Length: 185
Image 1 (tube, rainbow, N blue to C red):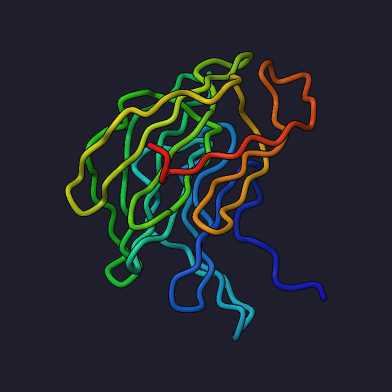
Image 2: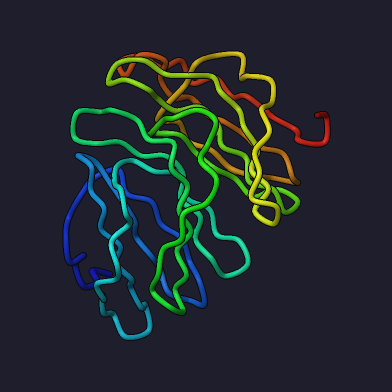
């Protein structure tokens, strides 16, 4: 079923759901937009833009939307971490990621947010794995993935993170699956 179009079309956005409302944040070419979609009313609402834009990673934790990294229009990476509070429509900056990047993914497992992979340039990926503790606003470095990857599919199943396919160089991919179990660390 077709629904109401977004207020600003863009690529490489991320979505998070809080209280049944879908929030779309960031996107390609340094987009900073934050928009909310209510499936019950089929309406979009403009929200306060993220302070910096780009292809961010996004995770919802305790009713707040955590966004990681991003990039400008020239693919320069950011290490910024911003938290969006849908109740107050405000952004708060948190402790920066140790590694600046965009095109990475983030996952909530046992109250911690794992940020994996991504890019630091417009043509190569990283294998970086870092974990963020949202309660203490602190970061830890973890062992890297076996391969440098960006733009991959992913999922969390039984508290294990699955990284699927992706590309090391923005051009090729091999369809491999990598399993990461945070309990092993």
